[in-house]
Length: 452
Ligand SMILES: Nc1ncnc2c1ncn2[C@@H]1O[C@H](COP(=O)(O)OP(=O)(O)O)[C@@H](O)[C@H]1O
Ligand SMILES: N[C@@H](CC(=O)OP(=O)(O)O)C(=O)O
Image 1 (tube, rainbow, N blue to C red):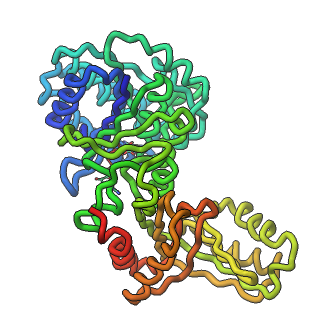
Image 2 (cartoon, rainbow, N blue to C red):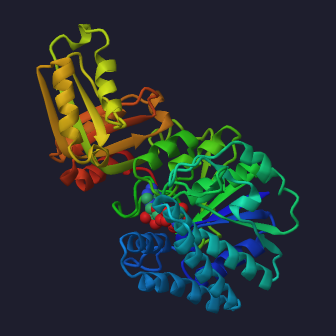
Image 3 (cartoon, helix red, strand yellow):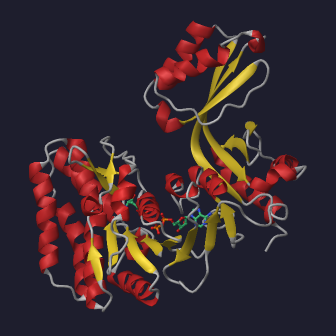
């Protein structure tokens, strides 16, 4: 049995839902479907999730929200009329949103409840349309399916018992349709996963139902070795590993959520990335072990912007027992998570996302380092981009780091820092944010020029 997840780009309009219905109808192996909220129909369009967030912002600041509500409902109206479903469903959706606005008094809880509507309404419409089209289908809310999560608003984590609950749906005669992106906490709150989290819901359902494969439908036929928005005609990946995908999605490959691999890798359910607009193309497979490790040692290069490095220099740092612990404790005290730590014998740089060092946190951290460690120098560099070169074949191949440094140097790009992951499946280069497109293109050409 397959579980198929359809992303926002696959469900942005009635025409897209028709394509989705056809895919499900043509593949009797698809036993369960997880859906996102309607995404963008064209470049400057707004995702329904963002419209719901805007509605929430108006409500909590006391501004009128009717226009925002109409913008949301008009997206569903187009889908409902385009699919020929009864308009009573639209009224039901309006009432659901209004009841959340009227009854939920906690702002964070209200935000999650409103965000959940995006996926919840899509699932109800799709189940109805599939049935109209002759494919027996049934809508299950996360509560019906037993998807229980922790109670931290907008940051749900699955409670393991959910897998057993979902497993009870295994023998369903109808195609199961579940909204992605949220679960229910034991306190009865609707709690969403982080943004892009429908991929996580799809993975959870695939694991609960013990699927043979998790198909993830989007608007691309493959995962490419570099973001197709930055590199023209990038290499299409046939197969990559869970570990490679996690590194790449964490650092910029937004096509699949990095947290969606966790439910899958232990039970080795493969993921197939497929295109709703070209479903006949096989797509890219994510598996535990891949072929061609030696022929294609590097599988992808991602790039992520918005980092800050705080660098500490202290003569004989290496001799001072407990130095790193004290330094990291300072970051922990300020609740700043650390992304990378390139180091030498007398210096270390701590790289963090700039958004986590908001307000005056950089100054506070620097002050604490100076007070507690009394180093020679503490310096901050903002506006950095990280280029992450990923491939499990790197450990078998000599000279790969050299390729990247050569490409960057030949293109006049200053390498601000570099770091090789302990696993030898990734290398990270920090460059100035203003250089990142040039850097990505230079490094991409070096590794993939001769691979079709
Ligand atoms: N390496 C990559 N290969 C393919 N697409 C990528 C890559 N990195 C980023 N993307 C982007 O991911 C997008 C698909 O993800 P997303 O917008 O979340 O889709 P969906 O709406 O289907 O969930 C693509 O349109 C593309 O711009
Ligand atoms: N709709 C949610 C969750 C999601 O996964 O969406 P998408 O499939 O469009 O990435 C969001 O926009 O974050």
